[in-house]
Length: 102
Image (cartoon, rainbow, N blue to C red):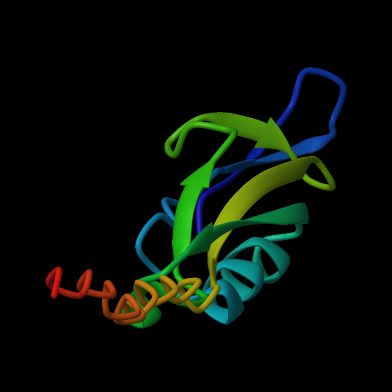
């Protein structure tokens, strides 16, 4: 964990890369080094991506003050909406055949 002192003695840290990690791991990565975070989600129909960090707003490797907030976005699984089946065609009523003249 890299910590640096700022110009006025405020300590700084290097933002870790949390993209591709779990939501829980992202939170832990930030809080362990003294950063706050805010999170939001984006929907995915791929259940394997659920709770995986999609992006972060502060670039990894950037130096920030301890206590800074790093926003990140994680995937939230949303089951796909089923496509309604096409209606079954109803057979047409038979057409009456005119009677032959007698």
